[in-house]
Length: 141
Image 1 (cartoon, rainbow, N blue to C red):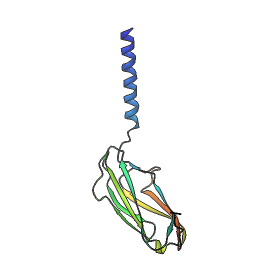
Image 2: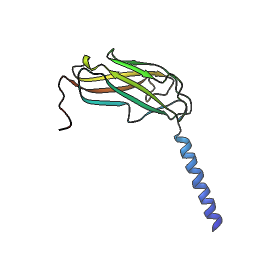
Image 3: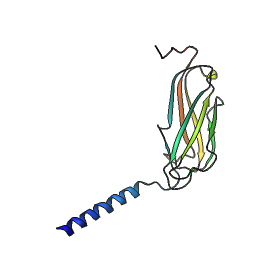
Image 4: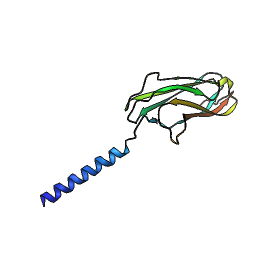
């Protein structure tokens, strides 16, 4: 009975290791903390609004970000210039020029890298959105 139980435990352990190994994605892969869309909500026009997209490389090879390009000139960008090794964290920092926004906005930012994309696109796209207003009610009330 002990031999049968030992064999059963070994089989289950091996099956678990095999399933975990199959979940590992080959190549460089982004995993953005909080997703690939950030909603600023209602923001006041004028000051720059910043958000940093943090990601982890969940793949098996380093991520090399070649360029980050916003869909318009109203967004400044910064990012890791060094390769992000598997298991390591990286960032893409965006600064939106809110004085150029009027009302609801939706912006795209394109990341050119060697990382795999969800549907085989040539670049990975992250998104920012919000509603820029001249007057914003005080949230402390």
